[in-house]
Image 1 (cartoon, rainbow, N blue to C red):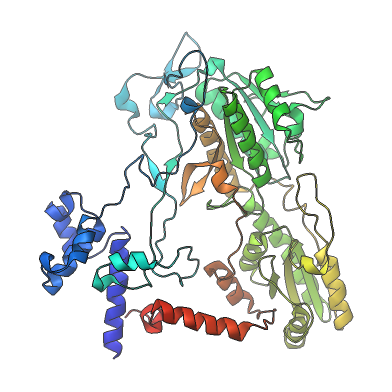
Image 2 (image 1 turned 120 degrees about the vertical axis):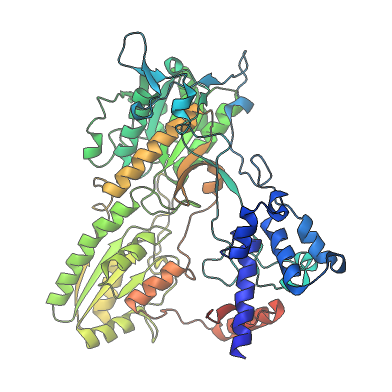
Length: 589
């Protein structure tokens, strides 16, 4: 029985990997491809090849199974410009000037690539017409990066975002592949970031502006420095303005632009914060666009989070409505790491690293006191990524509380009861809590200048509740501004340099209304609306949260009255999907 189950499971997973276009390690398929077999050379998909291979193994004739013929003919539109491409706005489709927008030969160069030549007896280096020397230097406009790299086998897989197949899907599947456990996988392709050989701005006509909005984050100055250096040194742009104190700096009285150059920003990365100043609010789109056009700004780089990107998107849309030649490019800045689709945002690693100092101090205090409790409150308004990763990195934390996971403070299954157990067992307890966690206990009304709901101070309230409930010595540490008002670490500094350079490349390539970020380790251009649809949150059913629970050993702090009903519903769902438990969870031997 065991052998049969294992074989079936292995076969299922093998079919899944092929049908998703992920390839296979089977030598027979590799050899067939090397020989140039018609199965591959005729343009048939991996799924079609899988169907043909299955027929060959089972001795099934093509004429005997119409379902298999369907898969033999099926083709994904994976080509560039196909329906699976994520579209982004381009100035070619927006600009309404007297003359049509024509591509120009780029002036961007890098000395190591042999693409630069002296011009007019100056130290500026310009693009060489010798194309042999720069074949590997410029990114081809057709380069793409797959948006979601993981094809889930079932909708029950951890972190799965796929939906179970519909009845229509199942009716078109061949008999041997009919399993609701197999999720549909449709690849989406995003445009790879990088320098282009053809651009849509002449460097001498560019007036670039940079604005930083929202709260502070390690690495802002690194991004500013990278943008300025790429504009001046890479493309030869001489007019670069820094907008002071957020969007308000465009139109409010009393603000003057800061003239930026490579010399001005040379040591900017050595200090935290923003050399331009930053602020929330001030998003009067009409006034901002009026100011942009009045100053002759045709490239705008917005460094900010979700709210700032929403503002950048509105500015780009208004410029497009007026038919203006203005490229608006965002660089995601959020210490909370809560931007959709991106691998990570700059400043996050530095924040996690700085949080270790606070956790270490709380640990020392708690372990040195009689029944000591160390409580550390970290940043995380709606998402608990900093708290989760800092907990994992520390290894000393016993309890981690984040906004995405509800918890009870009192009661048999509450946080305080577990604190008591830890004090009795090991004599101390270390607790990390995100600032947005447990807001139902400390509700306040109102919003800040950026429109975000005001948060109650959960840290002191929780400390007070712990003291009231048990005899202990509580030490509370709030390093909120320490983790964001510092210089970026090496990893974030590198990321900031890459993001800044690619922001400039995107603007010169003629894109607008885009943001820059890492997707599957590659830097890409993404349409702003796609990443601001909602905040990225920690998945309580995901692998990383499970890893953290394994590290802390903490229980579930919420007693669900309808838990039994939910379990019954899950069983009913599994019955409807016809997914045998062993087929999914039995380890492959």
